[in-house]
Image (cartoon, rainbow, N blue to C red):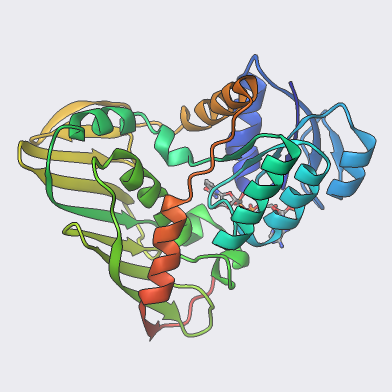
Length: 303
Ligand code: NAP
Protein backbone atom coordinates (compact mmCIF):
# COMPACT_ATOMS: atom_id res chain seq x y z
CA UNK A 1 0.00 0.00 0.00
CA UNK A 2 1.22 3.47 -0.81
CA UNK A 3 1.66 5.75 2.17
CA UNK A 4 2.66 9.40 2.67
CA UNK A 5 4.59 10.46 5.77
CA UNK A 6 3.96 13.97 7.08
CA UNK A 7 6.40 15.82 9.39
CA UNK A 8 9.91 14.65 8.61
CA UNK A 9 11.58 15.31 11.96
CA UNK A 10 13.31 13.21 14.60
CA UNK A 11 10.82 10.37 15.01
CA UNK A 12 10.01 10.16 11.29
CA UNK A 13 13.69 9.61 10.44
CA UNK A 14 14.59 7.51 13.51
CA UNK A 15 11.64 5.11 13.38
CA UNK A 16 8.91 5.63 10.76
CA UNK A 17 11.11 5.53 7.66
CA UNK A 18 13.11 2.42 8.71
CA UNK A 19 9.89 0.62 9.74
CA UNK A 20 8.19 1.42 6.42
CA UNK A 21 11.26 0.45 4.39
CA UNK A 22 11.50 -2.90 6.19
CA UNK A 23 7.83 -3.78 5.71
CA UNK A 24 6.30 -5.83 2.90
CA UNK A 25 2.99 -4.02 3.42
CA UNK A 26 4.11 -0.47 2.64
CA UNK A 27 5.65 1.72 -0.02
CA UNK A 28 6.71 5.18 1.19
CA UNK A 29 5.41 7.10 -1.82
CA UNK A 30 5.66 10.74 -0.68
CA UNK A 31 6.68 12.99 2.19
CA UNK A 32 5.24 16.30 3.35
CA UNK A 33 7.52 18.61 5.34
CA UNK A 34 8.72 22.18 5.05
CA UNK A 35 12.40 21.28 5.47
CA UNK A 36 12.66 17.51 6.03
CA UNK A 37 13.30 15.10 3.16
CA UNK A 38 13.77 11.34 2.69
CA UNK A 39 16.25 10.51 -0.04
CA UNK A 40 14.64 9.05 -3.12
CA UNK A 41 11.06 9.86 -2.05
CA UNK A 42 8.89 12.49 -3.72
CA UNK A 43 8.71 15.50 -1.40
CA UNK A 44 5.93 18.06 -0.90
CA UNK A 45 5.95 21.04 1.45
CA UNK A 46 2.15 21.34 1.83
CA UNK A 47 -0.29 18.49 2.48
CA UNK A 48 -2.96 20.00 0.23
CA UNK A 49 -0.56 19.75 -2.74
CA UNK A 50 0.27 16.11 -1.99
CA UNK A 51 -3.40 15.16 -1.59
CA UNK A 52 -4.31 16.85 -4.88
CA UNK A 53 -1.35 15.47 -6.86
CA UNK A 54 -1.34 11.89 -5.54
CA UNK A 55 -4.85 10.37 -5.44
CA UNK A 56 -3.10 6.98 -5.66
CA UNK A 57 -1.76 7.38 -2.10
CA UNK A 58 -4.52 6.04 0.12
CA UNK A 59 -2.87 6.26 3.54
CA UNK A 60 -1.31 9.19 5.40
CA UNK A 61 0.84 8.85 8.54
CA UNK A 62 1.30 11.99 10.62
CA UNK A 63 4.52 12.43 12.64
CA UNK A 64 4.04 16.13 13.30
CA UNK A 65 3.98 17.59 16.82
CA UNK A 66 0.43 17.52 18.27
CA UNK A 67 -0.60 21.15 17.70
CA UNK A 68 -0.06 21.34 13.91
CA UNK A 69 -1.27 17.75 13.46
CA UNK A 70 -5.04 18.37 13.51
CA UNK A 71 -5.23 20.49 10.37
CA UNK A 72 -3.20 17.94 8.40
CA UNK A 73 -5.22 15.01 9.73
CA UNK A 74 -8.50 16.76 8.94
CA UNK A 75 -7.36 17.54 5.39
CA UNK A 76 -6.29 13.93 4.78
CA UNK A 77 -9.56 12.48 6.13
CA UNK A 78 -11.62 15.05 4.23
CA UNK A 79 -9.80 13.85 1.09
CA UNK A 80 -10.89 10.28 1.87
CA UNK A 81 -7.50 8.97 3.00
CA UNK A 82 -6.89 6.57 5.88
CA UNK A 83 -4.94 8.24 8.70
CA UNK A 84 -2.45 7.07 11.32
CA UNK A 85 -1.55 9.49 14.13
CA UNK A 86 1.66 9.62 16.21
CA UNK A 87 1.17 9.85 19.94
CA UNK A 88 -0.27 11.92 21.57
CA UNK A 89 -3.05 11.76 18.97
CA UNK A 90 -3.80 15.49 19.22
CA UNK A 91 -3.41 18.63 21.24
CA UNK A 92 -6.93 18.26 22.71
CA UNK A 93 -9.48 15.52 23.19
CA UNK A 94 -12.20 17.39 21.33
CA UNK A 95 -10.12 17.65 18.16
CA UNK A 96 -9.49 13.90 18.15
CA UNK A 97 -13.22 13.30 18.63
CA UNK A 98 -13.77 15.54 15.59
CA UNK A 99 -11.30 13.43 13.59
CA UNK A 100 -13.03 10.26 14.75
CA UNK A 101 -16.40 11.59 13.58
CA UNK A 102 -14.97 12.62 10.21
CA UNK A 103 -13.27 9.24 9.68
CA UNK A 104 -16.56 7.49 10.41
CA UNK A 105 -18.45 9.79 8.04
CA UNK A 106 -15.91 9.18 5.28
CA UNK A 107 -15.74 5.44 5.90
CA UNK A 108 -11.97 5.43 6.37
CA UNK A 109 -9.60 4.11 9.03
CA UNK A 110 -8.28 6.28 11.87
CA UNK A 111 -5.56 4.81 14.10
CA UNK A 112 -4.33 6.62 17.21
CA UNK A 113 -1.04 4.78 17.61
CA UNK A 114 0.69 4.26 20.99
CA UNK A 115 4.19 3.01 20.26
CA UNK A 116 5.04 2.09 23.86
CA UNK A 117 2.20 -0.44 23.92
CA UNK A 118 4.21 -2.39 21.35
CA UNK A 119 7.27 -2.63 23.64
CA UNK A 120 8.63 -6.16 24.02
CA UNK A 121 7.20 -7.06 27.45
CA UNK A 122 3.87 -5.21 27.52
CA UNK A 123 1.70 -8.09 26.27
CA UNK A 124 3.32 -10.50 28.77
CA UNK A 125 2.78 -8.05 31.63
CA UNK A 126 -0.87 -7.67 30.64
CA UNK A 127 -1.34 -11.43 30.54
CA UNK A 128 0.33 -11.89 33.95
CA UNK A 129 -1.79 -9.16 35.57
CA UNK A 130 -5.07 -10.37 34.08
CA UNK A 131 -6.06 -12.59 37.04
CA UNK A 132 -4.37 -10.56 39.80
CA UNK A 133 -5.56 -7.85 42.13
CA UNK A 134 -3.33 -4.80 42.02
CA UNK A 135 -2.68 -3.50 45.54
CA UNK A 136 -0.39 -0.59 44.67
CA UNK A 137 1.82 0.63 41.87
CA UNK A 138 4.39 3.26 40.99
CA UNK A 139 5.67 4.67 37.68
CA UNK A 140 9.04 6.40 37.35
CA UNK A 141 9.50 8.04 33.93
CA UNK A 142 12.57 10.27 34.05
CA UNK A 143 14.47 11.28 30.95
CA UNK A 144 16.65 14.05 29.58
CA UNK A 145 14.63 16.37 27.34
CA UNK A 146 17.83 17.74 25.81
CA UNK A 147 18.76 14.25 24.60
CA UNK A 148 15.38 13.08 23.28
CA UNK A 149 13.92 16.40 22.08
CA UNK A 150 16.95 18.53 21.21
CA UNK A 151 15.89 22.12 20.57
CA UNK A 152 12.19 21.17 20.23
CA UNK A 153 10.67 24.34 21.67
CA UNK A 154 7.18 23.19 20.63
CA UNK A 155 7.24 20.66 23.48
CA UNK A 156 7.17 23.47 26.08
CA UNK A 157 4.56 25.55 24.25
CA UNK A 158 0.83 25.36 25.03
CA UNK A 159 -0.41 22.05 23.60
CA UNK A 160 3.12 20.59 23.52
CA UNK A 161 2.39 18.79 26.83
CA UNK A 162 5.93 19.15 28.27
CA UNK A 163 6.89 16.13 30.34
CA UNK A 164 3.59 14.46 29.43
CA UNK A 165 4.97 13.94 25.92
CA UNK A 166 7.02 10.99 27.26
CA UNK A 167 4.77 10.51 30.31
CA UNK A 168 1.80 9.66 28.10
CA UNK A 169 3.82 6.65 26.90
CA UNK A 170 3.80 5.32 30.47
CA UNK A 171 0.06 6.02 30.69
CA UNK A 172 -0.50 4.19 27.41
CA UNK A 173 1.13 1.10 28.94
CA UNK A 174 -0.72 1.55 32.25
CA UNK A 175 -4.14 1.70 30.57
CA UNK A 176 -3.24 -1.32 28.43
CA UNK A 177 -1.96 -3.72 31.11
CA UNK A 178 -4.09 -3.06 34.19
CA UNK A 179 -6.92 -5.52 34.76
CA UNK A 180 -9.15 -2.65 35.97
CA UNK A 181 -9.87 0.93 34.89
CA UNK A 182 -7.73 3.67 36.41
CA UNK A 183 -8.56 7.30 37.11
CA UNK A 184 -6.61 10.30 38.29
CA UNK A 185 -7.27 11.96 41.68
CA UNK A 186 -4.52 14.57 41.89
CA UNK A 187 -1.38 16.01 40.35
CA UNK A 188 1.47 18.41 41.10
CA UNK A 189 2.92 20.09 38.03
CA UNK A 190 6.21 22.01 37.84
CA UNK A 191 6.25 24.69 35.13
CA UNK A 192 9.56 26.41 34.24
CA UNK A 193 9.18 30.16 34.76
CA UNK A 194 9.70 30.81 31.03
CA UNK A 195 7.53 27.97 29.63
CA UNK A 196 3.88 27.03 29.04
CA UNK A 197 4.11 23.28 29.75
CA UNK A 198 5.38 21.30 32.76
CA UNK A 199 8.90 19.94 33.05
CA UNK A 200 7.96 17.55 35.89
CA UNK A 201 4.76 16.03 37.26
CA UNK A 202 3.73 13.84 40.15
CA UNK A 203 0.41 12.04 39.73
CA UNK A 204 -1.92 10.17 42.07
CA UNK A 205 -4.51 7.66 40.89
CA UNK A 206 -7.46 6.27 42.87
CA UNK A 207 -6.18 2.72 42.61
CA UNK A 208 -3.21 3.38 44.98
CA UNK A 209 -0.99 4.10 41.98
CA UNK A 210 1.42 7.02 41.75
CA UNK A 211 3.66 8.38 39.00
CA UNK A 212 6.77 10.53 38.88
CA UNK A 213 7.56 12.14 35.50
CA UNK A 214 10.65 14.31 35.10
CA UNK A 215 12.31 15.76 32.00
CA UNK A 216 15.53 16.80 33.80
CA UNK A 217 17.22 13.44 34.33
CA UNK A 218 20.80 13.35 33.15
CA UNK A 219 22.89 10.15 33.14
CA UNK A 220 20.99 6.84 33.23
CA UNK A 221 17.40 7.21 32.06
CA UNK A 222 14.50 5.58 33.91
CA UNK A 223 11.29 4.26 32.37
CA UNK A 224 9.99 1.84 35.01
CA UNK A 225 6.66 0.74 36.44
CA UNK A 226 6.10 -1.62 39.35
CA UNK A 227 2.99 -3.19 40.82
CA UNK A 228 2.38 -5.11 44.03
CA UNK A 229 -0.44 -7.61 43.57
CA UNK A 230 -2.23 -10.18 45.72
CA UNK A 231 -0.01 -12.80 44.03
CA UNK A 232 3.41 -11.17 43.84
CA UNK A 233 5.35 -8.29 42.36
CA UNK A 234 5.78 -7.30 38.72
CA UNK A 235 8.10 -4.70 37.20
CA UNK A 236 8.30 -3.41 33.63
CA UNK A 237 11.60 -1.67 32.91
CA UNK A 238 13.17 0.16 29.96
CA UNK A 239 9.88 1.57 28.73
CA UNK A 240 8.01 -1.72 28.78
CA UNK A 241 10.74 -3.80 27.15
CA UNK A 242 12.03 -5.76 30.15
CA UNK A 243 9.86 -7.82 32.50
CA UNK A 244 10.63 -8.88 36.06
CA UNK A 245 8.39 -11.03 38.22
CA UNK A 246 9.11 -11.29 41.95
CA UNK A 247 12.51 -9.67 41.34
CA UNK A 248 13.64 -12.16 38.68
CA UNK A 249 14.02 -11.62 34.90
CA UNK A 250 10.87 -12.89 33.17
CA UNK A 251 11.30 -11.94 29.53
CA UNK A 252 11.48 -9.11 27.06
CA UNK A 253 14.41 -7.56 25.25
CA UNK A 254 16.02 -4.16 25.72
CA UNK A 255 15.29 -2.73 22.28
CA UNK A 256 12.84 -0.17 20.97
CA UNK A 257 13.25 -1.29 17.37
CA UNK A 258 10.18 -3.55 17.36
CA UNK A 259 7.69 -0.83 18.25
CA UNK A 260 7.20 1.01 14.95
CA UNK A 261 7.17 -2.14 12.76
CA UNK A 262 4.38 -3.38 15.05
CA UNK A 263 2.46 -0.10 14.68
CA UNK A 264 2.60 -0.27 10.88
CA UNK A 265 1.60 -3.94 10.92
CA UNK A 266 -1.39 -2.95 13.05
CA UNK A 267 -2.31 -0.15 10.62
CA UNK A 268 -2.17 -2.63 7.74
CA UNK A 269 -4.39 -5.04 9.68
CA UNK A 270 -6.91 -2.28 10.45
CA UNK A 271 -7.09 -1.40 6.75
CA UNK A 272 -7.63 -5.01 5.77
CA UNK A 273 -10.41 -5.27 8.38
CA UNK A 274 -11.94 -1.89 7.44
CA UNK A 275 -11.69 -0.88 11.11
CA UNK A 276 -10.46 2.06 13.20
CA UNK A 277 -8.63 2.06 16.54
CA UNK A 278 -9.10 5.22 18.58
CA UNK A 279 -8.17 4.77 22.24
CA UNK A 280 -7.99 8.05 24.12
CA UNK A 281 -7.60 6.70 27.69
CA UNK A 282 -3.94 7.82 28.07
CA UNK A 283 -4.86 11.30 26.86
CA UNK A 284 -7.85 11.53 29.22
CA UNK A 285 -5.45 11.00 32.15
CA UNK A 286 -3.17 13.78 30.87
CA UNK A 287 -6.12 16.15 30.39
CA UNK A 288 -7.26 15.33 33.93
CA UNK A 289 -3.76 16.09 35.26
CA UNK A 290 -3.97 19.55 33.68
CA UNK A 291 -7.50 19.97 35.10
CA UNK A 292 -6.72 18.82 38.65
CA UNK A 293 -3.03 19.67 38.87
CA UNK A 294 -1.60 22.09 41.41
CA UNK A 295 0.86 24.30 39.57
CA UNK A 296 4.27 25.32 40.90
CA UNK A 297 6.75 27.56 39.11
CA UNK A 298 10.29 26.25 38.89
CA UNK A 299 13.61 27.35 37.38
CA UNK A 300 13.55 28.68 33.81
CA UNK A 301 14.57 26.08 31.22
CA UNK A 302 16.53 26.57 28.00
CA UNK A 303 17.86 23.94 25.62
P1 NAP B 1 10.36 17.09 15.55
O1 NAP B 1 11.69 16.48 15.34
O2 NAP B 1 10.26 18.49 16.05
O3 NAP B 1 9.68 16.85 14.12
C1 NAP B 1 8.41 17.16 13.77
C2 NAP B 1 8.43 17.74 12.36
O4 NAP B 1 7.14 18.27 12.16
C3 NAP B 1 9.41 18.87 12.22
O5 NAP B 1 10.64 18.42 11.74
C4 NAP B 1 8.71 19.80 11.26
O6 NAP B 1 9.16 19.55 9.96
C5 NAP B 1 7.25 19.42 11.30
N1 NAP B 1 6.41 20.54 11.76
C6 NAP B 1 5.36 21.05 11.13
N2 NAP B 1 4.80 22.04 11.82
C7 NAP B 1 5.52 22.18 12.93
C8 NAP B 1 5.44 23.04 14.04
N3 NAP B 1 4.48 23.96 14.15
N4 NAP B 1 6.37 22.91 15.02
C9 NAP B 1 7.35 22.00 14.92
N5 NAP B 1 7.46 21.13 13.88
C10 NAP B 1 6.55 21.22 12.89
O7 NAP B 1 9.45 16.22 16.56
P2 NAP B 1 9.54 14.65 16.83
O8 NAP B 1 10.47 14.36 17.97
O9 NAP B 1 9.73 13.92 15.57
O10 NAP B 1 8.08 14.44 17.42
C11 NAP B 1 6.92 14.42 16.59
C12 NAP B 1 5.86 13.57 17.25
O11 NAP B 1 6.41 12.27 17.44
C13 NAP B 1 5.44 14.08 18.65
O12 NAP B 1 4.07 13.93 18.81
C14 NAP B 1 6.20 13.16 19.60
O13 NAP B 1 5.48 12.93 20.79
C15 NAP B 1 6.27 11.88 18.79
N6 NAP B 1 7.40 11.00 19.18
C16 NAP B 1 8.68 11.52 19.33
C17 NAP B 1 9.71 10.69 19.79
C18 NAP B 1 11.13 11.20 20.00
O14 NAP B 1 11.97 10.43 20.51
N7 NAP B 1 11.49 12.41 19.62
C19 NAP B 1 9.43 9.35 20.08
C20 NAP B 1 8.15 8.85 19.86
C21 NAP B 1 7.15 9.69 19.41
P3 NAP B 1 9.21 20.74 8.88
O15 NAP B 1 9.76 21.96 9.57
O16 NAP B 1 10.10 20.20 7.82
O17 NAP B 1 7.78 20.94 8.43
